[in-house]
Image (cartoon, rainbow, N blue to C red; front, side, top):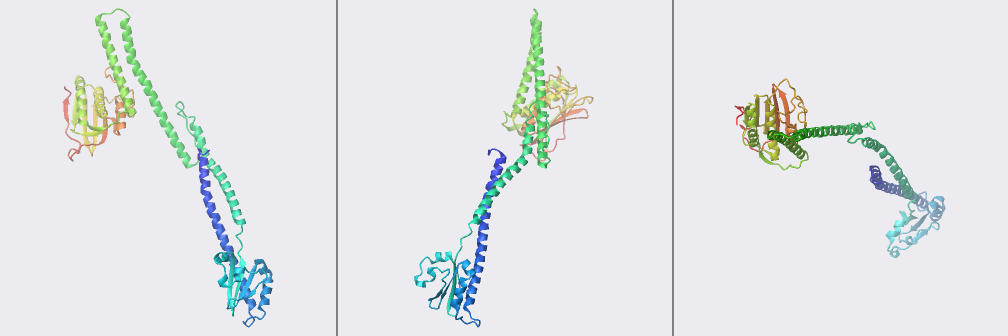
Length: 471
């Protein structure tokens, strides 16, 4: 039962209410007792004044009939109802008068030297008020009345009723407050991997519930988009794997259909080797992309990004030379960053390889690595036909195709830029691609550099070396 928020909130409210009611009841009892005691003391003092008045003569002297007057006073209704007795002593502490009705306790009639030791306890049980007149000391005595026992019992019963009503009211109100959440939970249970397009409806008009529903709908939209992307990725990956496998299988089947010459078998083997290498490249790219997404290789260390870019350029020189590309290179030396070494190397290689593959035949490739405002920036650009427009929002999606789709000439598998995006996301870098003025430019911002650069080195280099791509 206590697993539900409703029951826990009800119990917590009741547990907080109980000490509050106990404290309130105690204060009520104390206040009522104090008020009753003050009222009793006031009435008691009035009775004392009446007793003193009976002992006075009109001229202020001692009334010769004071004993008779006191007897008549004690026999009156007021003194009887309040059970008030009277004791009169002279200056020698000798008792001169004791009321026969409502007789005072024996310790009041004893001489001071014979009174018991527990006088304090006795005085707490009796209310006493006295005064002097002439040679006499007059004291009136009444037993203290116990506190009305009905008040604590009434308060206890009332507290029990309040606790019960509060528990019921809290249970009801919390249920009303949480009912939209239950309705929302039932709506959400409909959503699944196959029904992510479900839209949640606001079960109440409360601003908090509206915000919650909007947040959940946004989450479902993002999950749906991710599921769609993964679905397209799996479909594209299956297609990409099936193409070389079918080609490989077709060549082998054709070669086995009849007897062939050694030259024909050699051609089949070469083509099969090409398709097998394509399968290996695609499989390695898929595995690397999975490793990045699953963060299975996240140990960062200091990496010389300048060396990584130079190594990538050396690997691509032959391809650039075959396509007669012109290279503008400006790589600032000794730039260190914190990264997974393989990530930095693959990122630089993929960007430079992608530029050399898709650059216009005989066109320009520009590679810049510099530090600007304490941030390391890598720019890789290549000439590209202005007649073809690239969707830069989707270009980083795996297996994305447009008018520049990879083909047998480029040899791409559609994962190069997707791996670049995954690497930058995993390391907290920023990557973007823009197309303008006949160029496509990919820019990576690596954040602050580890190398302590001088003010001169922190400025974007203005010099640019232009040379043909020669080995």
